[in-house]
Amino acid sequence: MSKPKVAFFDFTSCEGCQLNKLNLEDHLLDILEHIDIVEFREAMDDKADEYDISFIEGSISTPSCIARIHDIRRRSKILIALGACATQGGINAMKNLHPIEEVRETVYGDDKYLFPTLPAMPVSAIVKVDYEVNGCPMSTPEFLKVLKSLLAGQEPIKPDSAVCVECKLRENECLYDRGMVCLGPISKSGCGAICPSFGQFCTGCRGLVSNADKNAMIDILTSHGITLDEAKKRLLLFNSYDHSQSMPK
Ligand code: SF4
Ligand code: SF4
Ligand code: SF4
Image (cartoon, rainbow, N blue to C red; front, top):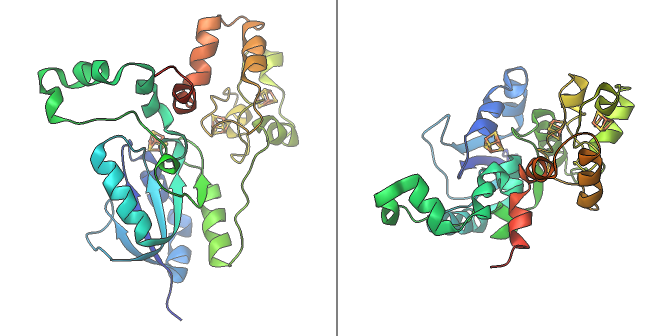
């Protein structure tokens, strides 16, 4: 039986999620027994026409990104967004909080007309995304879980509980009790609460749970010594795309 053809593609990103995959040394040989990697710009020159599974890193932020993601979607049976840029627009979407012409001018100066740019978008804003692997960078354990589930013909689990749940299961002392603040109460789990487990507050890189109460989160942050302005900035770090969708056009 032929192995599934798997491809990796990058869009607007720092390529950290792809590098994270190349760091899977302990698992790579096992993985390669079960799949054929047919396209992966960072690691090989080969190309293919069709893919069983396509993994997408990065946000959509230019007209050419839109044409390219449509083309990849058309040639992919399953399409998976990897990392905060691809799943939520990521930190790239902070530019959406400013007029796009102002952004172009700031970045490109007099050459701004040479570089068409759009507000940064998650892949799902343009094409159907079948599954997501969240995080900045994407969680490698979750990447492996999703890949294994698909290879076993099972539906990958889509986490939608708060980081606090995993943090409590690890019996961590809450950082609020140590005078810090943390976005764990509204941030999507699946990372094993890795940051609070090492004494670092959660910045919400995996996006928000579906029923997140952002106003209550801001109240909690401001009642723990964070200014309102800073509290809003913390919430926007990985969630500017969603916020920009509700801004007046
Ligand atoms: S999600 Fe983070 S690590 Fe991954 S490409 Fe975007 S900025 Fe880089
Ligand atoms: S440290 Fe953060 S994630 Fe852990 S319980 Fe406290 S608020 Fe939740
Ligand atoms: S704890 Fe928060 S910031 Fe850290 S990986 Fe998990 S979701 Fe991201």
